[in-house]
Image (cartoon, rainbow, N blue to C red):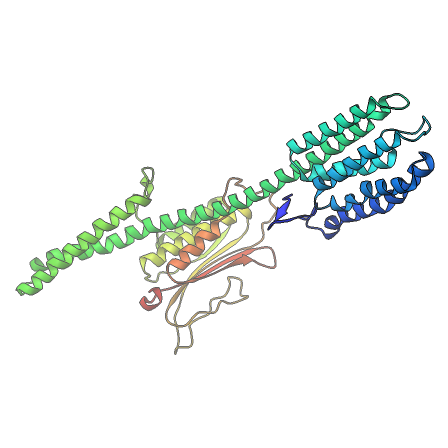
Length: 431
């Protein structure tokens, strides 16, 4: 419950999500003011025999600040506390019955308890302790001047005020803890998403290094051996090949130095050859043995290594999600190349069930990766993995964005899930 926003004090419960909760403090303050103002005048004049003018002034000073307490409870407390003490001193000058409560009549107790509750909802512990000490000090001090002797009932002012301060403080601190937990959860969720994104980008960078390094190594070898493979090369051509080989070696060294920032000592598995379209069949077979029936439509087209690697990772993550969230569900994995016809776009592969079709963009051939799973045969009691990040789609989108493709992922009306990616194959689309 932040007390001040942009230099202006906020009303109590102003941060509540429901409108009636935000209006509740104003309604309570208004009712108390309307009820206590005439009641105080009547009780002080009729029961205690106090002068009407004095009783009216005290009633206004003790009741009207309750409206101010909604916004500035501490300022309202200064006025009400002074008015209550002044009222107790004023009652010493009149003769009232012993059965009547003194130094603080019942209507003053009601208003003061409500004020202490407002204080507890707004002020910090130190302020609340000082308020209670002032209340207790005034109560005990006035007890020495009690006209009919002092008893336990005269301490109601201190006891009830302390209870209200404690209750309000507990509610305020509980609200603060909940607000901080929500903020921390929001920050943690954002950090998890950002960390997942960075980890996936680092992994992509390492894999790209392996792909590009292979081609650069081929260029280096071809340029170095050109003078031995090709007879009678002119000197300027021989120099050109030597320059190409040197540039390629320098580029490889620079790439390895940059990659050293991303690699770690435990990444020994990254030295293995990177998978592509040919390895997706093995991935599907492994999933079918453990997760459920998988129908696979392969594609033996030649695709760039970056596209093949991205397709493998997309299928890998999609099948992992099926095993986690829909164990035992029938899954359809399809790979196909869409070829444009007469500049009007190519084939439109179905969604794996003969239903909705994906439109193929113009501008060249595209590899379509489609993974569709049915609803699980039995609703799972819970996810098989409870420690997952929940950001698998982030990695898929990074893969697709890397090669300039598109991704469509979401639930199906019957309870299944579909992941459809289109990855461009032509050089102009990849660039």
